[in-house]
Image (cartoon, rainbow, N blue to C red; front, side, top):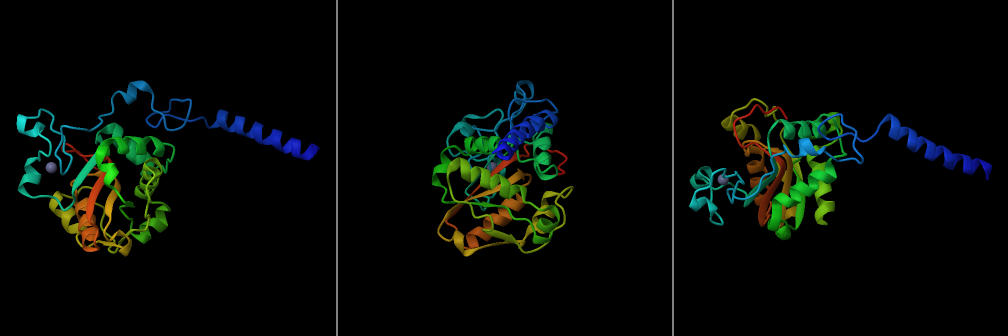
Amino acid sequence: MGFRYGLRLGKQTLAALVDVIWPPRSLLSDEVVDRPGVIEPELWAELQFLGPPQCAACGFPFPEPSEAELLEGALCGACLAERPPFAAARAALAYDDHARALALGLKRGARRDGLTTFAGWMAQALGPLAAEVDLIVPVPLHWTKLATRGFNQAAWLAQALGRRLQMPVAVAGMTRAKRRRSQAGLTAAQRNRNVRGAFRAGPGVKGKVVLLVDDVFTTGATAAACARALSRAGAEKVYIITLARVTKPAKIDV
Ligand SMILES: [Zn+2]
């Protein structure tokens, strides 16, 4: 009796102590916040959320839209010239210093406390497209990378989004057959070559509308290579969702 009571008291004390030593911090600063996954209002106001008007295919924002660009289904110049191999790509945030910090916290800092927040933002960015999705699949890491890092940040995002949308997630729906060089610092053409033929999709995607999840959409080379692999495996349609998307030339190191 006395021992069990003591144990319970011990647990409570420990929880209180952990909160003092290691209280929840803002996703973007050292600011102490009242619960995990929160960003203080001043920094939150600086986040650049993406939404319409945007290219119906790649999701590129139209900052000063022409009348044609305001029409539903309007495409950007790049997608008019060549339709991407996916039906549509959307992203929650424009890639800037804040988005970079969030993506790095996830990938290098292994921070899981933002996942529920990110899933909410990504669901918002998908809008009505989410209702069409049958299966969520993350962009895979090569197994050697998974072994050294210990986790796939795209899989974390996919699982969080699956919980949010209440949809099935196939964490191993795709595999990376080829170990690629890091994409950091490569041009668009180099990125395309680097990922060509790198991905395989499993039989579970056949006949499904697949939502592919990644952390950052840079040139779209990875998304396009994955979409082609999913289509080859019989996926009916492929949508892409990422936490952030490059919208202007930027140094990408995630
Ligand atoms: Zn486009």
